[in-house]
Amino acid sequence: MLDSLANYRRTLLVACGGSFLAFLDVTITNLALPDIGRDFDGVAIADLSWVVTLYTVVFAALLAPAGRIADAIGRRRLLAAGMLVFTVASLAAAAAPTYELLLAARAIQGLGAALLLPASLAYVLSDSPPERRPAAIGLWSASAAVAAALGPVVGGILVDVGGWRWLFCINVPIGAWLVYETLRLPRVAGSGAGWPDWAGTTLLGGGVLAVVLGTTQGEAWGWSDPRTLSAVGVGVIACVAAVLRSKAHPRPAVATHLWRSRTYVAANVVSLAFGASLFAWLLVGVLFVTTVWGYTELEAGLAMSPGGVVAAFVGIGVSRAGRRVSPRLLVTAGSVALTLVGVAAGVWLPEEPAFLAYWLPVGLVSGAAVGAVSVGVSSAAALAVAPGDFASATGLNVAIRQIGGAIGVAVLAAVLSSGASPLDLDAYRTVYWLCAAATVVSALAGTLLRLSTMPPATSSGDEAAVARG
Image (tube, rainbow, N blue to C red; front, side, top):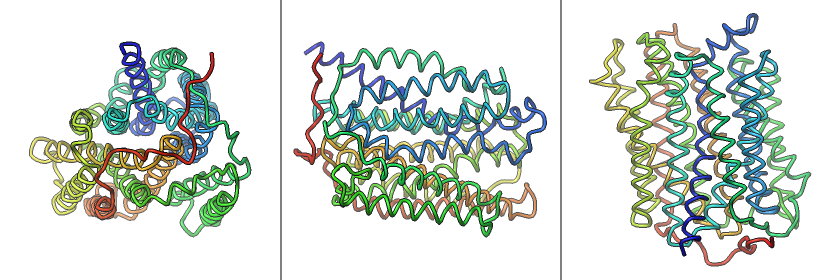
C-alpha cells in the first residue's frame, strides 16, 4: 500500500512538473523580446516574434499525434524522451550564439513539450485509482494554468535580473531532475497495436502546423497574402484528410471514436473558445500595462502575478474537492466570470495606472476563473473517455486549445494594429470585448458537459499494463 501511494505521488509530481514547464514556456518569452533584440544586432522587430511563434506552432502541431504514439508505445518512454528533448533544447536556447540557433532550439523545445504533455496526464491517470483521478486531473490542470499565467511574471523578473538567457536556464535543472524521476516510475507498456498511421500522423501534424502558422503570421504577412491563405487552406485540407483517413485505418492518427462522446466534443469546443480568450487575455494585459501605463518588464510581471497565484489556489482547491465539484459547474461558472470581467474591461479601461482600484480586482477574479475552467475542461476531456484513450484524448484537447490560442493572438494583433496608435484605448477595449465573446461560447459549450467525473469502465483498447522487467 505504501509503495503504491509513493508511486502515485511520484507520478503525479512528475506529471505536474512536466505540464508546468511545457506551458510556462508558452508565455515566458512575452516580455523578453526587446532584450533578445538588443542581444542579437540586426534582427528586425517583426522577426523577434518567431521566438514565441515557433514554440507555439510546433507544440500545437505535434500534440495530437504524440497522444496516439503514447497510447501505442507506452507512456513512460514518451514522457522520458519528451522531457529529455525539452531539457537539452532549453540548454541549447540558453547558450545560443546566434538568433537562428535560438529559433532552432525553440522549435525543438516545442517538440519535447508536445511529446511529454499527453504522456504525463495519461501516465498519472492510468496509474491512479479511479477515486483519485479527479484530484489528479485537478492538480495537473492547475499546474498548466498556473504556468501559463505565471509565464509573464517569471519572464519579467528574470529578464530584469539576469537577461533573457535565464528564461531557459531555469528549465535545465528542473528538467534533468524530472527525467531522473520519470525513469524511476514503473514501466508501462503501450496498447501493443503498433505505431499509428504515419501518413495520417504527418497529415495531421503538418495540417495543424500550417493552420497555426497562418493564423499567427496573418497580421505580419497580410490576411489576403498568398502565404497566409495557402498556409490556412492547405492546413485545413490536410487536417480533414487526416480525419477521413483515420476513419478507415486500423491504427488511426486521429482517434475519431472519441467524438462519439458528447462530453468530449463539448470539451473540445470549450478548449477552442477558452484558448482564444486566455492567450489573448494574457498578452493584451502585458501589452497594456507596458505600453499605456508605462510599466517596466519587471513591474508588468509583478502586476500579472496575483492572477497566477489565485489560479493556483483555485486549481489545487478544486482538485482536493474531487468529484464533489462537477466539470460543468467549473467551466460554466468560470466562463461567465471571465465574460463579466471582459465586459467590465471593455467598458472601463483606465488610461492612468490604477493597480489597486482596477488591475488587482480584475486579476483576482480572472485568475480564479482561469483556474476553474482549466481544471473543469481537462477533467471533462480526460474522464469522458476510457483509460486506454487518455493520452489521445489529452493530446487532441490541448492541441485544440493551442489552436484557439493562436487564433486569439492573431485577432489581438489585428485589432491593436488597426488602432490609431499604440496608446489607443479603444483598441484594447475591443480585444477585451472579443475575449468576453469567446468565453460566452465556452460557457454555452460547458453546459453540455456531463456531471459525472467517473470514466467509462471499458475501453476500445485495454488499459496499459505494467510491462515485464
